[in-house]
Image (cartoon, rainbow, N blue to C red; front, side, top):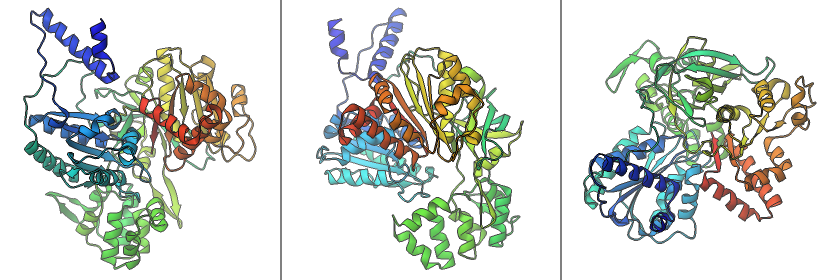
Length: 600
């Protein structure tokens, strides 16, 4: 036992699980009359390829996993690590490194990458003269800071003396177009530097793995709509829906914290607006990449026409001869470009900046239509072969003309028995603690409350001893209190222990018919969830110090930043730390997986 303890000292949780699984596989081998397999000599750091990924929505993880499979098929010694699992002390000895990382919001790294990003870009990063590296950045050119995190890592590694194994790659939402050739070329170069080895035997996992479904992002499942209910009052300024879909017969499995991918279709009325403004014939057959269909079908089912991006602005500037647009694109962080990308749809620019388009040129300037991800609002332990969503419908007017969101308009119009093309997108960093005695703090204003409905359902089914505390905020108590009756029931039956509310636009507190919510709503006058966090700071800090897990879901642009700032204030005020120490303390919670964010 002493020798065993010495051998296991310092291993991470993932490494300990690997040792346990390997030992179990060897025990099974011995029971069948075999012997314990001899371990191959450890591969030295400099003799292997390390693939690191940082992902918020799963795309970087998928690309990195495919990279690892491609490398393994060639017999390359390699390891695949999520960024927060990478041992930073090993960077100085690393010789061959591939990084696949996305950029979130206004140029921020994914949560699982923050620690490694800050280490590499900070003063403690070592010189790396012997490192060969390549970085693939993923982003969305609808945002001003496109692929900023990947570019900064690429430049910083070069500053530290490392040499590029392959040039930096920038992938937009149609990431396969860049990721596929980049991956193929970079693995070929890695093969020239590393000696292929025999593929190691795979270890049988101890836990039961559910059979893989035949359905995926590329082959979605056609799910039947079971229910579609508006869950705000008629006089609410927003249309928010609760949808229930059937997964029966799909083989799809999900956990609380995962997302549901929905393949959208653009509204027919919006397509007609495009055809009318551009004076194009929707029935015209157009051939792209050996595929032929009408222009109307291309715009409805295959092209992104509700989200503006740089490539489309550039094409419009060139075709229409609009120097103003061309100049705007040269100013990367210019406020006008930022506002345009955030506020305008492509149809707005087509109306303001006339141009004569050909059908083929138009389709080339538009990105492929991509799926939308929604936080799952249910626990399968509670609802069985169903999956629930909470969706804010994008529906507004510009100068009297309607505008829509691609997926939300489809979801809003999906009556019972309608079919939606869906898939499950796992979110490994947004999981309930395995220990059901741990307390959980959930911060989810607006539709950000969706995954916490799933959390509360799951915790109720598990019947653990851990406490559950929810912070919820919205505009008005009377019209926008999502799942009000469910939270009241959860308070009564003990599935929810604390509920703090913030309604930011209530001029006067309304009458409250549910007496159990009187106390938690008493101070709901013109406040936001971050105000509630500061008010409850003493208890909040005590919960965190006691090992509670903290979760935040919702808007990344403003809410997530304001909540993070409030958390720093709480730690400063009630933990007696400086602002810098409080930031580091929260960073440590992120690294531990006790502070998780699902922001968009």
